Image (cartoon, rainbow, N blue to C red; front, top):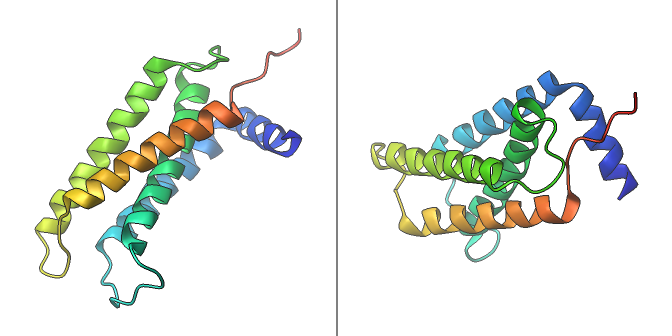
Amino acid sequence: MKLFKRGFRFFHRRRWLASTLLIFLFDFSTYSAFKRGDGVALFPHQDKVLHALAFAVLFFWGYFTLNADFKPKVRRWSFAIAGWTAFCCALYGGLIELGQKMTTYRDASWGDMAADGVGILLGALLVALLKPYPEVENG
């Protein structure tokens, strides 16, 4: 747990880096969503599992970044930050599905949206368990 706290402290002191990493995560997710796949799945329902994992990471890091950038004095669970993060993630997931519907080589799926929602809930659980809040500064 100390390792996580040390890592969070590193990014809280370098908020620009946390925001840059969040942008990179969204870029990578967008690239992954629109690239042509080879159609080979390593295990059943791989697509849904990857959706859930991606959105868990996006929610967790989005919550962390919003907390650090806009509400640095909030040192506990915030429904406002969680709500905005969940809204942004869900909107992003919906836009990805809409974009995939417009391509000839990808399909939009309600199942993917449901997996995104599960990922958002998993991300919220991670926030609750790891508590990546800013530390109280002495002085």
